[in-house]
Amino acid sequence: MSDSVELFPIAIGEFDSARYPHIDGIDANLAAIIDTFDGFESHVVEWRRTASECCGKSTKRSYSDCLGCPDRLGDHYRDRDDVSARLQQWADGDSATRSILYWVGHGWSDDHQVALIHSRTHPAYVAHEGIRPEHIASAIRSRFATSPHPWVIVMIEACQSVRFVSRLQNALNDTMYPGSYLLISPTSDQGAVTLGRLQVMLHDVLHTTFAAEDVLLDRFAKALHARDVAIKQSGPISDDVIAFIRRIRLPANISVDARQELASAISQLPPDVQRHFVTKAHGGLGSFEKVVLNEQSWYFEGREDDTRHVVTWLRQHESGMLVITGAPGSGKSAFLGNLIVHANPALREALRRAGLLTSSVNGLEDNAFDLCMTLTGAPSEEVIGQLAAAVGVTVPDDLAGKGAALGGQWLANAVRNSTTAQITIVADALDEAVFPEELANYVLRPLAQVRTVRLLVGTRRVHLTVRMNRPRT
Image 1 (cartoon, one colour):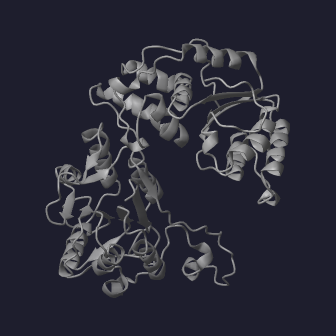
Image 2 (tube, one colour; image 1 turned 60 degrees about the vertical axis):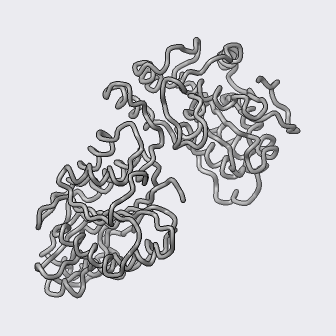
Image 3 (tube, helix red, strand yellow; image 1 turned 90 degrees about the vertical axis):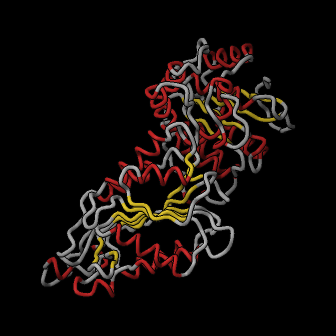
């Protein structure tokens, strides 16, 4: 089972009928919901459509005449077929992945029936045309048909949502669905729902109540319920079922302000720096999500001579390549990660104020590194694309599939011709790239010969037939 939770949004905010007003702020609300989960292992399955401007072909030139025109449909205009396809996409997803289905839009109920509104729902036929609880129940049963059943969360942010989640639970119970689930409405009140309330409650629970720990599903449900969020759940949930795993667990024994400052500093780091370099810098073992930032694990000791060597090399060289090498487990990545942490003023100061960093690296410039990347499992073509993006150039389409030699030559020339600013790149785990020797010979070495490029490369002590600076351990 993947540690990453799937976020699967269905956002509908544009409607044919004037009975259902356009939902202002739906984009901002959706972005805020997604951002709320950003500190946890999660990924988003997007649902987007690029809409063109009105073509002006209508002879009547009236608004109503254009309502059905597909050329004017925005990202949040979705009819029943669109929604059915989206629910089928969800139903066909990985049955081993924990998932959150989030619906935001309009809802309807006549006290006997309840439905969610799609963009072409006719007010007189909502019960027939709308999306009923049974539709979502069917998707849940289809996706999670086999054991073991990971948990699933359905969040409905729409009018009549509390009725909808109640009927959805009935539909699941009717078929004796055996998996764990939470069905969430932003409020326990019947009727209207205030857009944005759910995000506020989620943020409060995830980033205040459980600010320094992973989140258990049962405790998550109880914390939301305490904030008057309506929760319908499967039977009792075991107290060891994890809902959300933090990308970095912050220490619990520091002040709230220090923790928030540290979390903010970490959140600004690129993914490779968060997942690889910061993890290694404080001695974390195992996968990234298992790492805990605390007093015992943070302090990086030793390597003073090597640190001085790197700092001196950076000060004395405007271009070239310096290789950090050693046996597996010798601390190459930790060494590079420690340099990266000390070169980041915001992170360095946040760690210092939290009491997790006491020493400093003398002579290392602030923001000394422009790009930090791990090469594990990376094909040469992908690395070329990352390096090109870092200096603001785009790989030409005609280079696709032409090989690392041509790609590396193009990259070196593009960097040479596009910028006079110095760029310093840290690339770790060269030996774990798909083709290490190819990458070293045809991509990294030509790039290091550009007079404005400096490369720090981490690799195990392996034989590569490529000319490099003398390795340092």
